[in-house]
Length: 128
Image (cartoon, rainbow, N blue to C red; front, side):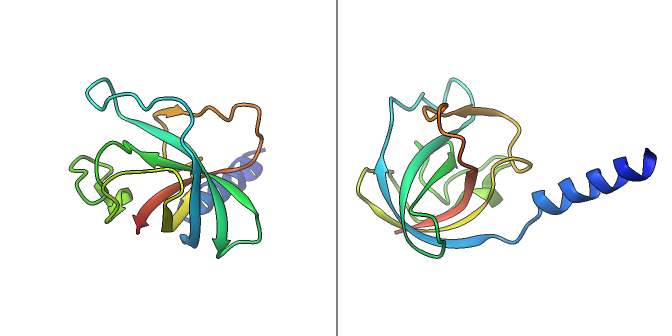
């Protein structure tokens, strides 16, 4: 029992520190309205059409406090909010570095895709 628990904890730790995946994608839609950043910190989930870097056609990507320009985040998530995108707009093309959302963020998630069971990624860097 203890051995199985240790293996599970190790596997979860490896998942959380997985190497980032480089993906180029087009932001297809921004569902709903993003909450203001003065309410709380959150990850907002966007849908991207994959242009290169993965076999999937579409992916769900979470962005930490997307109303703050990438590279301008100054809190504990600064190392997971890099890049040069100043504003997220539908149809914009982005080069991203992604890690699994699970294990890399444990706070609030604004996710309008609750019926979609696809994996969620966290964008740790987003560039135009």
